[in-house]
Image 1 (cartoon, rainbow, N blue to C red):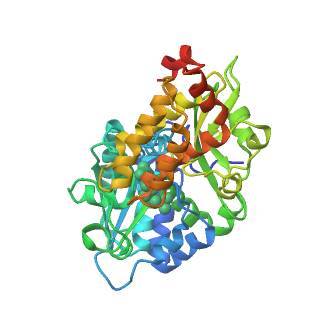
Image 2 (image 1 turned 120 degrees about the vertical axis):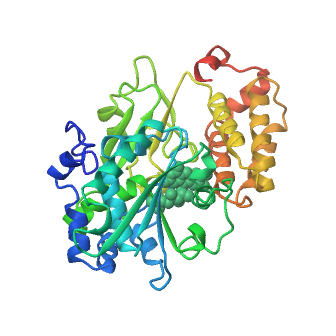
Image 3 (image 1 turned 90 degrees about the vertical axis):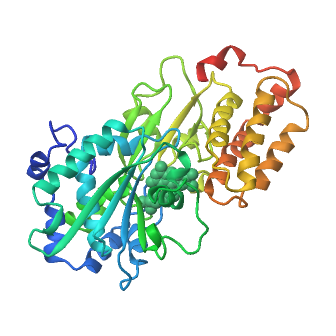
Length: 428
Ligand SMILES: Cc1cc2nc3c(=O)[nH]c(=O)nc-3n(C[C@H](O)[C@H](O)[C@H](O)COP(=O)(O)O)c2cc1C
């Protein structure tokens, strides 16, 4: 399979406009604004089956089609926050090929009738923000962005905006608050951003990888895109894999190939002396799965992980080896969610620190009999009751780790100690 998004990334200086243009760069944008109507571009993207790569997998063309035609201005916002543990694909996409993203932004903006687009980038990605700034400046100077692009009458402005580093600001409505200069708090929905988004105007929010696919789809067509992947999950997916494997990193996988291929062929397998105990397929928010042969053979697709009782999410694979205490791993996840809860709603504000405190108590050998039912009860009271999905996310690995590694929880409580105590520092 030839990669789509990473196809040209080995070419030196690909971040420079002239090199990108030499490799079909901006041809799709030119075609879109000189030969196609905005609705035709949306239709091509709908037909391709492209689904959002930020985690939820919502069909991209359908999202664009929700934007009303008669309300102006409309906005496009690219979500480049990427703050979830295990996720690091967007930063490589932006770092290696910034113009691929900018071209996608320009095409998507045209499709939804928007003349001002924002890229909301995680503030800690300082040098990638600079790469984007330089690429935007080059594109303006060459007339690929700005007024009357290619003499078409179409105007497009792109602004790169730095976040201040908060996981909640990856949640699309909190991102909009942050972009408007407020503290990043999720918004009540409805109204959804397509009706009332940035500055109260119709807004599309899409992930970096989603938008980076767009130039390729518009240039090569929906059928070509559907020749990759499965019926339900067309295309490729950039999978991040981290933990004790021989070659951690980002790998663009044809959807429908197996996790085994990612782990063993691309990432070079587990490091010597390590065995797969469990893995999290879709970033910290996705339920972990035990490392059974059946789970290693799951197809890399939305349906594959749904059927296995987890979530493909942003395809951020966190590998947990057999010498790591599941509770210790769970504790770092729970502490992350407690730290990142924005505090707007009570179930998440009160529940996430309570979960972390209870896991910490069990892990440190002070767990009580009633702590296991308590953990599940707190999860029950957060799930579906918090203002945004961050609360739900904080419960998914507790429920999964108790389900699959019940014995390990029990053993901690029974022996009043962590059987892996000597490992605690290694995973802290
Ligand atoms: C707490 C939280 C954090 C999120 N972080 C990100 C993120 O960093 N990047 C991202 O693209 N989507 C993130 N999302 C999902 C976005 O809300 C939204 O669904 C996504 O940006 C839509 O783009 P897509 O349709 O292209 O996937 C997050 C959601 C939640 C609840």
